[in-house]
Length: 196
Image 1 (tube, rainbow, N blue to C red):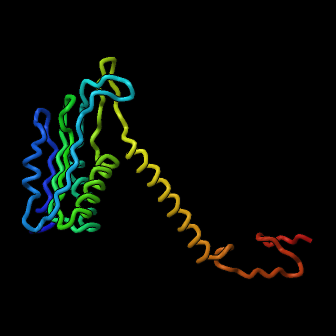
Image 2 (image 1 turned 90 degrees about the vertical axis):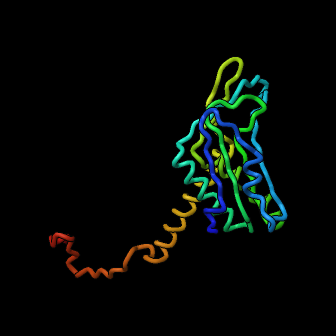
C-alpha cells in the first residue's frame, strides 16, 4: 500500500457531518499502538460574543492537494501508519465538529506530534475560510496560524534573498569582474577627447 493509499482526505459538502467513527476505523491497524485524534468543534462564545454557527468555504481541489502535501510532510517526519483528515463546508452549529484528524502510529509520540502538525498546517495554509456568525453580526476570520505562517514565510524569503545577495557578492567581489584601467598621460575620457 503506497503512502497516498494510507491517507483519507475528505472535504465534506454542506449538510454532511463528520463521522468520527469512520475515520478512527480507517486509521486502525494491528501494527498501530496509538491513534491520536483532533476534533475541532464550534464553541458557543468568542471574545464575549455569542456564536450561533461557523460557516466554511473552500477551494476544494487546492485544499485537497494542500492536505495531501501536508500528509506527505508528516510521513517524512514521523513514523505514521495511516492518516485521516476531514473538514466540513457550509454551516456548522455550536457543538458540532468542523474538522477531524486521526493518525495511527506504532508509538504515541509520533502520532501526537503528527496530529498537532497536521491541524496547525491545515489552519495555516489550506484554502478553507471560516466565517463566525454571532447573534449581533458576522465576520470572516483569519486564523492566527495563517498570520504566523505568513510572517514565517516572509522571514524565510528575506533570509534567502539576503543569502543570495551575499553569495553573489562573494562570488563577484565588490566591483564585479575586475578590470584594470590604465590612463595615458593625456587623460582621455571614454569618447577619446583630451581632458588637458
